[in-house]
Length: 466
Image (cartoon, rainbow, N blue to C red):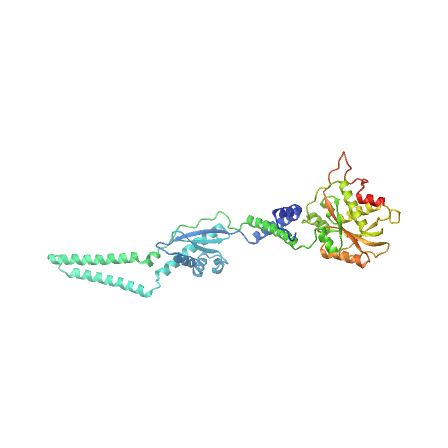
């Protein structure tokens, strides 16, 4: 698994073999999301729009958006609202402002209820307009403002002087006096129109006329993330983390999964591979206490990254495999002798395979008979954590039987070391696997689980004859 590419089929295998664990984790993640929604109450958001008349550049609009959420505006809005425990610092995280097309500043407010959110957005818009109008009205150029004010005073003084001159002139007794009065009135009118036009074209004055485009709409739903979004996010996140954790564990796993890898870790030759009928239940360790029952309930008592179970070839093919493995073992031994069949404790698949192999050995002649060449096998289970093999006595040599993908290279090497410490030479390795049992056949052939038929294989026939 550590060198394989992660494919969608791998994820599907995790889902099929770990669906109980995934279901529990997804429910736990959903409950965590629900708890988060309880700790963080729902929020509602709405916006109020402010129109800025005149021509504004983009950078100027961004500046106005910053002004709309400045501390001065927020503090004034908090003071006007008068909410308990909601000062300027508390409201600063609940408001935001942005720009829109058409020189519009959109101010948003977030609160615990739709009514409070609406009031907050409206109040922020009003306070922004009031503050911006003061800033724009009080020009940042004092000299220009003073000159404009002086010009207005001069126009007013000139208008009064024109009125005095018109009154002092001959009140219409002569044509010249009438013309003079008319010209003075035209001059005063022109000066007043010029000042009105100056006021209308003053950019600062035009920009001060900001308009709130109606009250903010009352929000109809919660602002994201909603409670359901938190629940779904918690469930999805827990599912993804569990799947990623399985993939990461498989990537860093150093458990040999092939016969060649296991034989290399044990330092002996691979005699063959045998199968044991049964489903995934045959791969489970024997139940032992509450933790084992919990692991079985969650479906984590078997490895998910083992290859898919192949269909059984039937009892006849299974018997032939066992006899061929036994024939290879007999060929490797120079003389008939008794051997220990070492099986890791807790490896049910290997235990069943070793028992079947010992039964095949017991069906042949004994080491003391005239047939010769048939080793006698005795099955012993050793603890993987502290392997201890019986000392060499009646048995001289060991045959190791274990299942693939379950034990690490260090644990396998530890079994080989324990055999060497006890004075046993490891005669070979047999790898056991599990296959799906086929339904019994009512006609033709013997069903799975029946007594092994007397099948003569080449090596067996040779051994029996010689």
